Length: 164
Image (cartoon, rainbow, N blue to C red; front, top):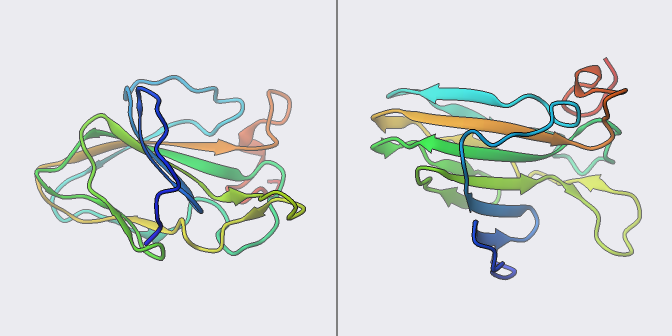
């Protein structure tokens, strides 16, 4: 399991873990974000039996970061299931039981001092949405990218950064 590096004392921030960087926050499910530098927000509804299988939102193979690729995810929990529906970081041995109006932020681009070019994480951000057993779960996903602009929008790149 990843151990906490430290607690950040910001009113909306609850917890910070290192490599991958993981933040648990309180949020508004209508938070605004620029769609020129980030992909549009995606809203997902889960009902009993529904889940999201293990996956990575960006490259998670230790490869170099590609211009325009995703670098981080904000997963906002607008409504939580009565039972089930946690988020599991499968290779990091981390299980997040969401609370309504909280969020998890994780970065999969890494560059430590003295290590040269930025690389993508090596699998620790692989995650899944565990099956909802009772009730329903609503989440909003926001992917952040690096290397996009109004002139070179996110839609010109696939999630890993390859030009479309």
